[in-house]
Image (tube, rainbow, N blue to C red; front, side, top):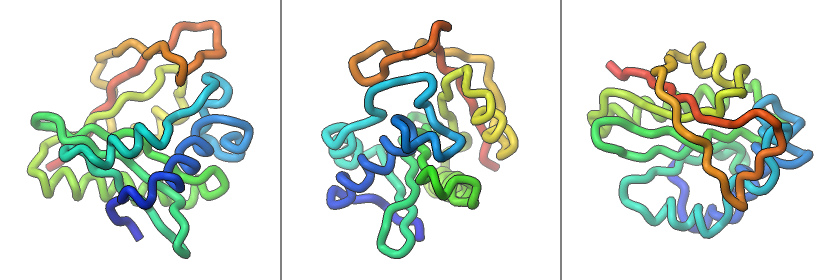
Length: 169
């Protein structure tokens, strides 16, 4: 079941998102960033801020009272920004991510927004290809990857984001 996350979900979401992107456990799935980045993907303070911001919607995918997937949707001008798409590593390739993408499209239509945009680290070609199979296209735009105490690069090549988008209707 896909519903809107609340402040009561912050601890479980924090564990899910960090386990899906970073650390040894994330390597059980195919979307890990553990071979690219160290540190955390998010923290509880950031998630509380996200949930408390009007233009943000954090959807959670729940099964048997456990949060096993989520996606952040941010209303920005005439588009919807999609981020933090996460599926529990051991459940990846089971269709949960696809269902969250479909719900993001429903959300964009509800807000009368004509496209969904996202950024993906450029060297994550397998993930980029997955999004392309779901109708997203590379806009050609690039954004710098943030350097911070949270996102610690462990690869030699410089990282950047590519911008993907999908037109809705």
